[in-house]
Length: 256
Image (cartoon, rainbow, N blue to C red):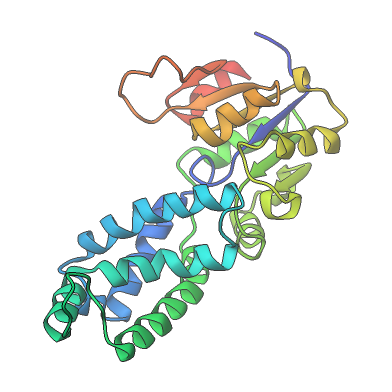
């Protein structure tokens, strides 16, 4: 095994259970704000929200949308396309076209609701934050052997709160956050900033993460070895390679 001088590690869905916390928050918001008025079920809402949210994050990473637009539109879009709202708008519309033209009052209501959901979501997700199984053991194991640096995308106001809530803040020599650097993974510049903070070269470190695009491809673009936590059991696409593959966090200890 290659000897490394430091370890970089992703946060959301590598150490912290972001997906689980987000879904709990969305379910609570669905009930709190009576989103059943817009959707036939929570599942319908989530199926509209999830892919659009991912699309917005991709655009945000390419500087095509702002942080504020992402936070607002990930709720405004599903509200506008909920089956109950669409059918109501269609019935109330007097138009010679096939396009739905909701009344101004509807749009004002949805805009206000989307703004409220956007404001609540970050706080509610953070409140429901928890570590993934085995995460604390892995982080403390790694921190005892290597300088450990978090390299993560996300918003400043919630990420640092999650770091503190985890009880692991003291394990990290450095934290490199996309919003502070001014770019997101997979942009190699965020990895180069982490290297600069550690005073090391790319060949001295390894990156651990769950996202092939953000963590693995991003680290590779910066010349850094990678450990891909691959949770899917589907065959690995030919174009998606990594230095090391694991299925669980505890397997990383066999490598490092």
